[in-house]
Amino acid sequence: MNVSRQLLIAGGGIGGLAAALALSSAGWQTHVFERVAELSEVGAGLQLGPNATRLLLSWGLESDLRRVAAVPERIVARSALSGAELATLPLGASIEARYGAPYFTVHRAELHRLLCAAVLARSGVRLDLSQAVHGYSENADGVTVTTDSSGVAGAALIGADGLHSAVRVQMLGGGAPRGVGDVAYRTLLKTADLPLAARVNQVTVWLGPDLHVVQYPVRCGEAINLVVLVHGAHHAAQGGWDHAAEPDQVERALYATCRPLRDLVAAARHASLNERPWGMWVLADRPPVSVAGEMARGRVALAGDAAHPMRPYLAQGAGMAIEDAAALAAALADESTDIPTRLQRYAESRWRRCARVQARSERNSTIFHARGLMRLGRDVSLRLMGERLMDVPWLYGRR
Ligand SMILES: Cc1cc2nc3c(=O)[nH]c(=O)nc-3n(C[C@H](O)[C@H](O)[C@H](O)COP(=O)(O)OP(=O)(O)OC[C@H]3O[C@@H](n4cnc5c(N)ncnc54)[C@H](O)[C@@H]3O)c2cc1C
Image (cartoon, rainbow, N blue to C red; front, side, top):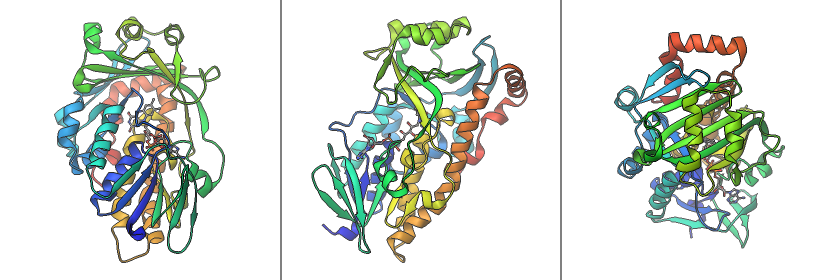
């Protein structure tokens, strides 16, 4: 094994696998360490904006993605109280023409699976399961990670080990992620079992006081991903994905909303494809990145949620992890300089954009969950300038 050509990656989530794919395509050998014994992403959906799909397509994943993705025709913002339509942003062919890449909605497990298959089809990639990274040591020639069973050396370490990253703790110290006071309840519904009005090929965002609900198709439209996000419900909940919620609990949170929305949420009782209709996740993030040094130091760099965890209110956490992967491959390709300098350039190229996306995601939580006069003002603005407010050219456009 030529250690100087080997990159170590902690974490085999969407960020870690995207990094392995981009870096192996650029000629690096990559060794991914994943702590779980079996790769299985949770059964929830992901929106992928043109900034993310552009990269996935450039990595040769177009036909695989089109086999599993839905291509929604529009994003529609509605009042959760009255059901009234507030604004629409055309997606489908319109956004693809504008930004040169599609807007997809996918099941996370399917994106994860196809990234995994693409990674394993490359020569020079090794994926070790049941291997948690506990720490690392670094010297002038390389970096060595300590895993459950051994120490492995490489030229650099990418910490793509998620919200509670061990690599981040060693690199930056600091405390735990901050709870944001919101809980996400999610389910996956069989489209054919839903009321006709709910079987729409669009992203619908229902905006209500202290809550919002997002629904969109996945699996080429065969299923609907439904997420109910509620402010202030976090006291009874615990972190992580592995918590079930009772249908009553979710329905109670929506008691004041309009009938079509309550019907949709109640449909989880009979139309959910999950063993337990509702899963629950307590949301956490970190303040926006404030300097490049928070994303790379020496031979170690952070990517994805390990670097910049954010609220899901701009639907860009995975998108930013995918962008990080492409940026790492671009920065590490410069053979004229040493690895720490290349990683520093990676961080310089990423931190401001990631910070902006984190800040915008945070701001969206205030806007989405607005009450009283602020809510009325938001609704008027959406009615008057909806398309302009919902489009995000600085995010979706080519850079
Ligand atoms: C409700 C909700 C909706 C969302 N919707 C969207 C959306 O529509 N679009 C979007 O782009 N993003 C969305 N996101 C965000 C997105 O899910 C995350 O940002 C993204 O999955 C982060 O990927 P990651 O690989 O960085 O981290 P993770 O997915 O957390 O992966 C980290 C991996 O590292 C492993 N690991 C952890 N510690 C160690 C260790 N010490 N050693 C080895 N392995 C380790 C874990 O087991 C895991 O496999 C949403 C998030 C939520 C909560």
